[in-house]
Length: 482
Ligand SMILES: Cc1cc2nc3c(=O)[nH]c(=O)nc-3n(C[C@H](O)[C@H](O)[C@H](O)COP(=O)(O)O)c2cc1C
Image 1 (cartoon, rainbow, N blue to C red):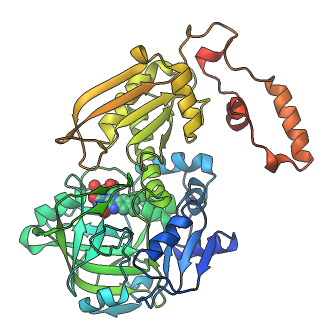
Image 2 (image 1 turned 60 degrees about the vertical axis):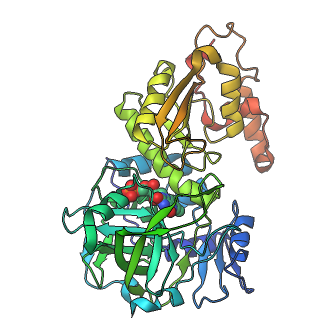
Image 3 (image 1 turned 180 degrees about the vertical axis):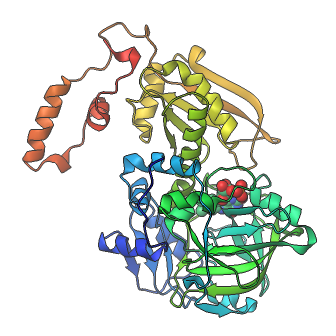
């Protein structure tokens, strides 16, 4: 596996500086109410720049959001071209390197008693029917002292009493398993806000129980993750985080939540979550508090989508489907709707790819398999493939009554019908010569170069039939080669 350049910096602030230099960070200096106004600002800039809110009412600290809200942003954070993001992430899934424990760390420059936590770290209220304010960008690192298992993943936290909070974690997540096995003593954890984007991405990988996501982040950083021991437990905390809330997760202390927004953009009512007992707060000397707009928002979607896509790509390779490209679409909230592009001439693997995706990530509800001439992140192009290359009676798979995660749209009684669509072109479906109607490739390339020389390249807005010629080179599938 190719070694990656050591990024040196393991903080989130280095990337914020970079966004500022590139004009992709806006500062909001007018007062913003954390109840609904902050969510409105983030929603209005959802597909735009990152946002730093410098005067959120009730917070001494600035809040930053919409940082990783596009594939281009995530590529920039990983310092790779967009076309290499999936390769880079899937290499990280396959690679491990133990964290490096350091004695002093930026994230512990200031230390506070537990009851300072909600005075210093503000939890905004996002949506009309939310039952309270939430930390939505809390990446929780955990250490099970009995098994030695470590874990890093996101879960929402709602402040309750002065030193307690509600934590909402899906029952099938590894963090839940660790919290349950910890019993009455509670599971030592540290909720980190504002770590390097590479660490945030790794926290969203689908790995095995007990696999430590921080070991996989090392490949993305090009160096072991620097960690420091928490001040009240043996949890190893990313050393350059902005804010760290230390505590214990008590799975045996259920708390009712009320309505909560989900990635699909609607509310759910999951019933009870568990309790966080805060034991300490540590921060940098001048921290920012990271926020992520929950629900059907770009950052919330992409942060999950790309790590899931990387895991699926890894699984598809193990299943014998070759080097696929994988999108986990925004319309599926970055979780449940998957598009796989097979390598050239591999259309026969389509159904295998569908089942491999279902087997690999339980949340996946729909899989569309296309040829590699389709831009898998472009919904219109993918739907063109479905419309133009499928015979539904032959190419549609319906798998009824499959056990489903509780958050999958339209699941009923714990099961859902999963759908596979083989939208690859099949030899014999089209009369030879009746495939794509486009000008000759060489002509399009020549004209494009001339127009680019004339400074018109940025004005291109090509007709859909040119998509595959312009973006991806000559990758026309077997069924279309005449
Ligand atoms: C921004 C963000 C917020 C998330 N919030 C939650 C949450 O509140 N509850 C939850 O169960 N999963 C949440 N997730 C998903 C989990 O973090 C993710 O599925 C993770 O891979 C689970 O890891 P684990 O099984 O190792 O615990 C969130 C993901 C992201 C990107």
